[in-house]
Image 1: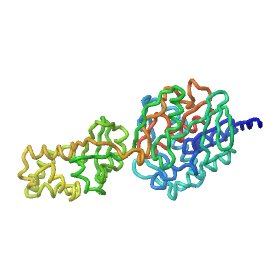
Image 2: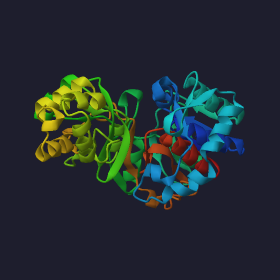
Image 3: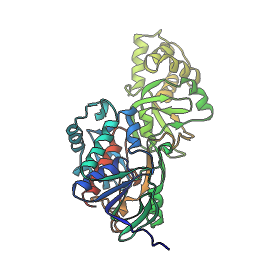
Image 4: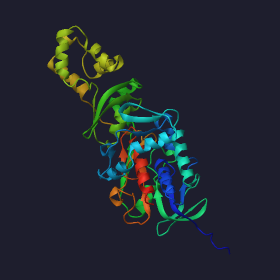
Amino acid sequence: MNPPPMARHFDVVIIGAGASGLMCAAAAGTRGRRVLVLDHANKVGKKILMSGGGRCNFTNRHVGPDNYLCRNPHFVKSALSRYTPADFIALVERHGIAYHERSHGQLFCDHSAKDIVRMLLDECEAAGVRVETRSPVSDLRIGEPHRLSSPLGPVSCESLVIATGGCSIPTLGATDFGMALARSLGMRVHPPRPALVPLTLSGRTLERVRDLSGIALEARVTVAGHAFRENLLFTHRGLSGPAVLQASSYWEPGLPVEIDLLPDLDLLASHLDRLRRERPKMALKTWLGQHLTRRVAQRWCECWMEDKPLEQLTAVDIEAVEAACKRWTVWPSGTEGYRTAEVTVGGVDTEALSSKTMACRDRPGLYFIGEVMDVTGHLGGYNFQWAWSSGHAAGQCV
């Protein structure tokens, strides 16, 4: 009987060849560590490639702790301060990647998200990192050393980094591998849920707005005390657009969503009083159409208020306009789910990890980075910056 094959030994094995995994690999390899990256998918960086409409919103100039959801709000500070947006921008510029800035400090590639993936792979190659795709991990045993099986055969390592991401967009290969591993080790995992995801409506509310699908309006959307002002988009199943996606990270079943469709008119009653004097014959629907588009104005007057000349508006009428336009409240029936969610809220409890190194406090040589942990960024490049920062932090220590 032949003896079992000898395990190949690496200093570092990283499971997951996404943004955080590749960043960690390059940082560790640059330090002279022998690094192996394993990913079950057929190519690396799939979420990078599809992000930003294929141009990758790779960071944001205005990153700060307030841009993240985490049960320990101080956890993100150390990694973000030691590898900043400016550091990643410098890397992008060093590789000659053209980029541009959009609203709210968002940075995108001029040409393609492929430029970012190529940059990360070039950094890994220069650092001597071995990257293997189509390499699912099995028989994983945490210890000193860590051991696992893969298509390469048995592998052992001193440092094991879990960079498997969250559950979002399973068609790209997303799984709960990292969270399941943490649970199996007795670590606390906060229940995951879809985030940065469209909200669905049902019943009479959906019937009223379904055929407005495709119309976008600037709005202020508030959930659980968190407000975001950007575009709102009506869809055939509910609501989307940047303002709704942002708010969705804070939404949980049973919570209302309050929407201000006239965010520039803080004193609506005073505004309408003035208009009644200046344009008394103007129809309410006409005025609303100037702010909400004619189709939305028509529907709002059909469903929530009576169209009449402004001079005929009573205090009760103005209150109806306020309620329907400044405090429009909906009770979502759910979300579009992981199928379209950009990220996942929840994950491995950060109390179990070092904020400086991402190391597990109770399991020597085990690290969690990126989206697998309970850190979720706002829309606009913040999640990628967390991938770069957390990956770099671990890469300096593994």
